[in-house]
Amino acid sequence: MMIFSAVMNSTSGLLVRSLEEASEWQVVFWRGISLAVAIVGIVFLRYRGTAIYEIRRIGWLGVLGGMFYGATLIGYIMALTHTTVANAVFTLSAVPFFTALIAWAVLGERVSARTAVAIAAAFGGIALMLGDGIASGSAFGNVMAIFAAVCFSCFVVVLRKGRAVNMLPATAVGALFAATIAAFMVDGGFHVSGRDLAICLIWGGVISCVGHFLVVTASRQLAGAELTLIILIEFILGPIWVWLFINEVPSVMTLIGGTVVLSAVCGHVLAAMRRGKTPLPGSGGSN
Image (tube, rainbow, N blue to C red):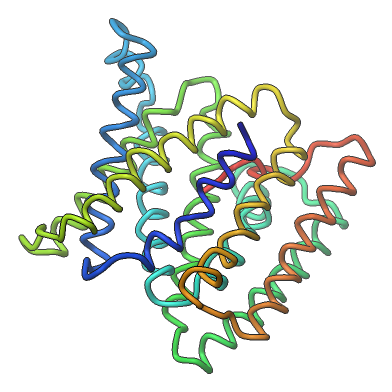
């Protein structure tokens, strides 16, 4: 399930590059609507008569988490449309490190010396990609990728804070939040081609929804370190799909920076597995 989820989610960049004319805000809107509807459908199918109660249980913490998740959806799509897929996904692969820093600041979770070294290495790789983005004129997309990573990390920290409550509905809240922001930005321009609409609906209502469900289900059977290593498949395959089918070739600096980030994540998790410890907080998350 975990491998299938990672492979599914890795197609996000290819889907965006396959759009004909839809603007980034139109994509945010239709993807958000379809994802929200699909998640709410799962909640009602799973809880039936108590579905409304489960939704209300998330409380203000769930709403806050949903807002962070919605901001993640916006930032991720902005990143994919304003920089290379490689830049976007390699930056997002550093989410466990952003999460570790935020969890340290908000929850007081300790950051070990080994984790600090891995964080420094990962941020060095991100700096290389950001510098390359500035040179190539795609700095905005790189910044949006960092924004998405930080927002998703905040979402993970909120989930950890409210782990006693089922936070699945918070995902739907986030999708609706993103769609609402997008609705104001498109200013009535909701119409897209049938092809673009189908891509957005499949991306949100099928790929993102099913992928999220598989991650949640698999996380009950796998250790956090195993989850993290398998999720790396998503970040490795993402640039490969657009290279094979769209001929989008990442720059040398992007490949170097991405390799540094992925190596930092992989090395840290493998070290944690050898020591028999839990990996970085949020390392089991997926965008």
